[in-house]
Length: 73
Image (tube, rainbow, N blue to C red; front, side, top):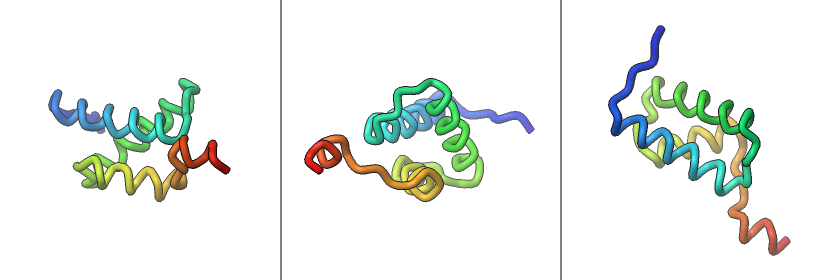
């Protein structure tokens, strides 16, 4: 099955991946790719908002602490 999305949907997916990776401190390209593939799968399953995508990524990958909270500990 081929994934198809509108430019607006692709922008939403990219934002979800960028936000998650930034919040969790993910900089490795392979890990970012894995998260992007996971976000795409979540989108295909019906997670079509930033909130739903983030919740799905948190459920699958585990929630991360915001960088400022992680530094304080």
